[in-house]
Amino acid sequence: MSDSKPQAGTKKKISVIDPVYQKFTKSVVRAIGSSEFYNYFMDAIAHAENEIQFSNRRMEKWVDRTWVEKIEGGLGALQKIISTPRNVIHEEELIVNVANAKKAGPDVVVHLAQHASLVEKFDPRTGDVRPSKLMQKYREDSIGLYENRLVYTVLENAHHFVKLRNDALFAEMSDEFGAKLKVQTEMTSATEHVHLDMYMSINDVDSALDTDGKHINIFDRISRLYRVLSVYMHSDFAQQMAKLPRVKGTITKTNVLKKNPNYKAIVALGEFLNEYDDVGYAVRVIEQNPVVTEEFQENIFRNVLFNYLILKGYLEREQDRRMPAPMKEKKRTLKPKFVKEIIEELTEDYDLPEVEIRRVLIEELTKEQLMQEEAAERRRLVEEREKRKKEEQERLRREQAAEKERLRQEKAAEKERLRQEKAAEEARLRQEQINREIEDTIRSKALKKELRYFADNLEKNLEAREAAAQKKAAELKEFEDAAKLLEEAEQRKLEAEEREKKRIKEERERIRREKQLAIERARREETERLEQQRQAQLAEEARLRREEEARLEKIRVAEEERMAQLRREQDAKDSAATVIYLDQVTIFLNALPQRLQLRQEEAQRIHQEQQEREMERQRRQLFRGVFRN
Image (tube, rainbow, N blue to C red):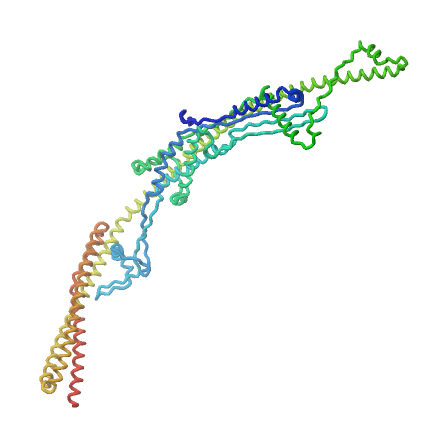
């Protein structure tokens, strides 16, 4: 245990009150020490009823630097981990309605190809697929790792560890020094009665960290530790980890805890806190001897004199400020052998009766007896004062012994409490170890049961998958046949349309030659106009065709790249399902250029028919106008 003492070279010089105290006492004695009043007052107060109580107690604290330095060494690692903790990404697959789907990536397409029940509609002619539901992947970052839970457990233990010692060390800082003086005196003179009741206490008031010059450094560090750990306990990381279970029992050394320097420092700090059994600080009570010396008592009497002079000098009436008169002393003493002489002195008148002489004698004897009783009373008071003084010293000694015994019992109780806590913690660790072993046994049995079930149902799953593959192949065959029939029908339709177009073209040529002379002028104008319109339309069609071809080419290239990526991803997951899906995609890609060509030709044919119908309508209107004319 270290007591954190500063270097001798840096020790501050302390100004003491001794010079001022000595000047004050010397000046008082020099000023009034030779006066008659001073001697009278000091003698009177010395014989008065005085009660003086003095005590001076202070505390000294020592702090073990080991735990302070160890926790300070782990603050950097705690700061880095709290700022950037390790996390893990949890991915969950959910089936949602197509209206709620946010994105459709390659993994969504592969999942849809493997689950045909999610397809709502399929168009064999165009190859369009309309699903009813899609698979969506949701990802979530989580910091609830074993390593992060260990970090929070160590942080919580360190905060509790420092808080207990911080509260204990700073709880009584303002009471570490205390001097107390209580004076009571009863003094009586011939003209006045003086009563003084005085109580004075001196307590050093220090700040939370500036209690003692030799301890300021270690107290500063403890206070900083408590503040920093309190900030860490209110961070976002701590608030999230507080909802998770703590790490209990022996620390499992994972690769991260072994290799990451920050987590290694946290493990070392956690092991230190678990193994540290000392209190970490000590408090010693130092008490000054409470016996009042003669010099101290004389100085207290001088202070009583000073207070008496201050109050007496402040009074308004001159009569109130008069000097006190001492008690009258009886100088003659009566003794039985001088009775005759006293009688003679007192009875010069021989005619004095005997009764009167007897009365005078009784009076004188009564005065002597009173004086003797007063002297006996003074001796009794002195003896009682000495007796009370001895009893007070004995009481203070017993209190000091009782205080030492109390501190010893508290220390023994603290050690017993720490021992019981350590035994309870060891029992808890043993119970946790037993519970962990039971959980491991249960998990092992469950895993073995799952493996047996998987082995028993492996052949059934393979047969079901093979049957599904055969069914898929049959569906693909039917789809190919239907596509082939559709292509043949489209071809026949195109040939019929071509023949019809040729016939219409010949008819139009014949009509044109017969009516050429009649409508040469009108046809030439109309032809020029139509030619311009047709050229514009052809240019527009050529532009649209080029754009459509470029767009289709981009779609085809993107589809080929996507399917290639799908093939690579699917090969790593399920080769059987990938072969089926890639066969279907290959068929689709092989038929895609032909289907696109058919669509383009169909669009051109429809557009050309519309154009020819429009030209025929315009010619007929022109012919009708010519014939009418």
